[in-house]
Length: 237
Figure 1 (cartoon, rainbow, N blue to C red):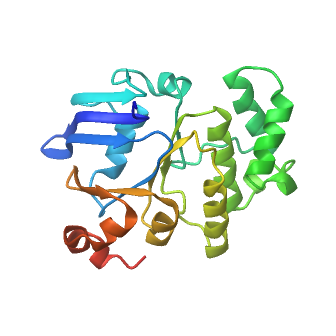
Figure 2 (cartoon, rainbow, N blue to C red):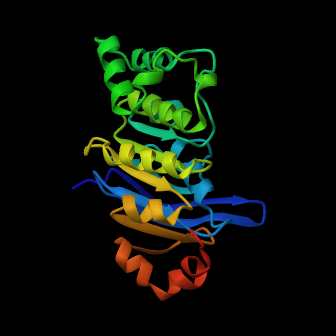
């Protein structure tokens, strides 16, 4: 079966620094996969390469078997690759409903109001549907960002540290919403919160020095002495 997302020899340098060193990576269809690693491992650069925010120096990126290596970020989004949670990109003056409706309408199709209402309800935003985004709590803004990302009907969703800055109750709420994502959406999450990672992911990739050090199910990664030496052993999350 064709992978949802795949990289072959993906590389990127910044002067003398190699941030991605020939990365071979596969995100299976329907996966709930996490990418973890110490600070400076190259995780954000890797996601920037996947989303089109950065161009690779070498290698290829395949979205469901289609080469998107030279596609722009907007073109990748139209093809079903969506990124959320990297920077707050919601529209501060629009209500939650208006912001999601704008994203739904941009994707095209009919029944914008019905699709918007369904997303608002799914993400637990019904009580603040008419509240301007700038007046939402931080956790609610994160959920609104996710609703906007899902409005594009992505087949692959990249989540860049979704739990950053959230309270414990907001983190639990986020996990519940992520667990309710449609099974046809393949998810890759970058996250430092190991409790969230091990609760959500069915597969974990560990990046160190711009390379994939290990991959496997959570129990296997937790027991891997190489991973514990470079990351988990010093992680307090």
